[in-house]
Length: 461
Image (cartoon, rainbow, N blue to C red; front, side, top):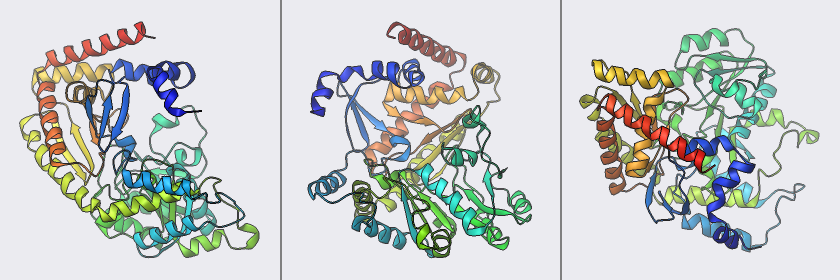
């Protein structure tokens, strides 16, 4: 079987196949907002369609492609691993590559984190963190924050603070307690009951790119230890250079008890997740020989994933990409911030490194307020699509809405953006935001776009 033959002979069947066998609703969404392109290749920060049009990818697979797509050094590492004919997943054995990657991660993570568990994804690392914290502390309750996102498997979903993802999938796992993000008083009130195993949080909330007060994470770490609970940081999206530091917690000099990572570690090729924790936690979970396999992940330490992780860490260091992320992200935010003074719907630009939010808000002037209400009455958060859709259609910039029902646009681009890419972003956003402030005519044009796209989707269904 030659994959290239499939790609060449059936290249334009992707939407039809997904509509018939996979998620047809996703196909409808893409066709409705005119995102249904036939991409044929990818390189670095760019996607290319069948007409060889180039698109700037500020979504990067929800943060997976921090090094860009098809990075040559990661490709070479994977090729050499395959060519080595290594024994893989023997299970009743311990692999060299897993040991080497664990060694590197322990050196790179905050002091005190000495043991590593490998899994296939971010949500699996969160599941492991929940189990490890319960066993290590002998307690059951897990505190999480409103608005957070930790994954969609049942344990991680129970710790996710967005009912949009939970509706119809209940009941959730018991003993999960939701509190407001950035609220130390609420955190201590629950911790003081003495029956909490852990508090889990993203250092920066991905849905909305909400950044906590400077004292929040240090105090949260102190309070969890005061009351005998563990402090878990979910760095699945924020980690490995995304925010301009190796780990987002470094912005506040915080040392967690458990740190979860994934996405970037894959190099954009092989799914992988890792949990790094304090040694005493690991030793309590795996405390006897008969408990050596009490928790695991069948494919978690596979050689290709470990090779991708090792190569990714090497590229991040050798290419100074973390420093580049900090500088380039700051340049983007500095260039876009003046627009918030010029346009009343544009509330704020915020973020750290290459994790950036553009927040929009209801205007005060009558005509613009009418436009806003027209969109919001149709669907909460729809104004943000007045930004993302023309960014894509008119400027070939792929971005995302930061969360369900939010008027926040989010950029999580590859860390490798160039100065010309920054200018591309600034020019595109400036043009689109200006057009979005034209009032009712902009809303009418946008409505026609959605209606036309929906009709086109039906005709091609």
